[in-house]
Image (tube, rainbow over all chains, first blue to last red; front, side):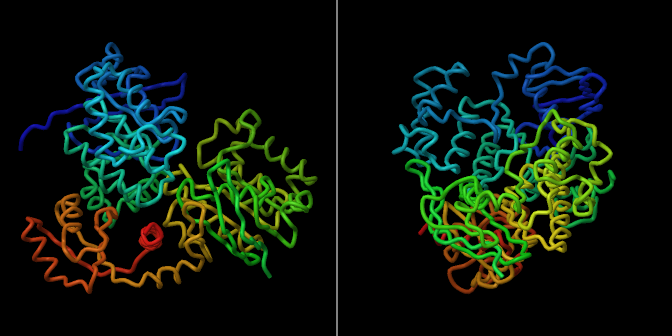
Length: 245
Length: 304
């Protein structure tokens, strides 16, 4: 079996806030091109880990490598090579579709000629060609979601972090969004996604379940279901959470 | 008796119509769900029912009181848990509860029985500032505060959004238990699987109600044969099914594709087609639709 390239390497990661241990000795790798699911109850430590992986926060101890860069010394390089999208923040309501794209692309240092070409391609692909000058506040939520994701990978980063990207969205748009995730994965962009929808956990290449700052399990959905002898990821999660009580 | 009657409600914000033509009746002691995504109009509707917003058109009556003209009296008997955590982050658990009890002219002790099952989970943390609680605990506190004055009607706006799957299940169990205590409960949620926990649901999308009925009845009206299909390559399977001549719909559902055909589904033909497209470990099973299947079907029908 070919050796898979790791795009994220975490070894014995600890993050403390005072005496509180938010991340307790985490060790895991994420392979290039994977759709890596990061599950866990609120308060389990997921956001803390993601902030470290995005170069926004330093570990207390342990080794963290993201896209070939060290999280302690090269956090700025990490930021340039990743994309990020969350439900809480994505695009500027009072800018147009095109202005948002230009703004983010500019921040990532893309050249104007490339921005223009990719913008046209993206708008055509999403079917927004006629709406390029519409303000974000005037477009439907489903469009915003898809656009936000596309903007997050516009600069073709190695990895994109998605923090509960489909929360509250209608079931059709949710699936269209996962189409985009699949396509990104096929373009060899690694996708790191957190979600509370257990059916979405099934779409991931591998899934991690965090609880109380630790990784409780990490494997493919198929293997996790076989291990816990259940039919779906909902039940895997339920079992693991139950065992904690 | 009807606890809530809404008649032709409409509300716009500027040029955007948030809700339109909304009419429904909710019976006393029902556990009633409004199921729909963000932007469907759930919060707007709930703010009208809780007297916080005046509709542009139409009327709403709760316990025979008009939400506009009788708002003061109505607020005494309503319990409301809004969509975002809105308690005082810097007050402790117990302080928040005491505050709400006092505002409604009661005490924690008076209706403690009602909230005991819920509050007991967080009582060990009663001196902790509310802002430092986990998501699940915040929910329980907000619910306790909404119940402390023994309301006749409890209105919960997306109480389980952003909460993990296990806590969500627990929360609905708490609601079912509350229903035994003679409270009418109205909940909104974007999670389709929670619809089955309700006595009746309204499926709401883009400001309109698509249908109102018991979950079982909605499912029985799906009207088409539904199949769950899987193979070794899920994403390719979906695309191949969409390209199949007989395909009417093919949606991702966890590890399966939910498929409906334009005509009666011929499993053998479908199986042969998939084999020809290099799929292995093919499963094609007829299944009963769930609320999510029905919701998407109605959405697509309404969009056409």
